Length: 196
Image (cartoon, rainbow, N blue to C red; front, side, top):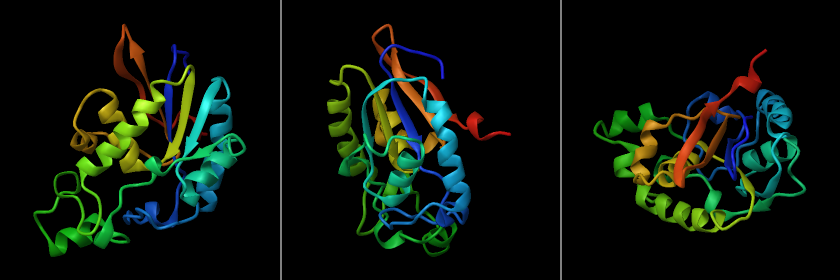
């Protein structure tokens, strides 16, 4: 990992059965698969070069498992702000299943019945980023795909809905930071540590 002054490193949890089948897991507490566990362990070497002042993790087991297997379980602070998007009535469904019943639906525009909207997730993320920016040193976040996409969008001043344009793989590493006092994305969706 190249070194930048004060970074926020985002790690999406490893593979679960529901990420393999493209089901919206949301608040469901789905564990990692064997592959997800192996990929989480590969994160150790990838993250080791960076000294982190704080490590924050979603309370859901797939994120906590990833964090622990990457070597940060003892240091991590659970944060509700890092919970995945609440998919409400669409939890457990694939996008294709939702679209079969509601052809005009778009998660980032419409949100989910009895669940979150992009604006609600953005407000939660903004509270977290306000705290993260006050940390003296690097911060490591273990969380979920859609949530981390909102984190990146809000980091660079875009609306939460802009996360729709930021695909994110399981066990990926992304790096946010500053360039000449401007918030930037240094690295996005890096899975090079999973190759080979």
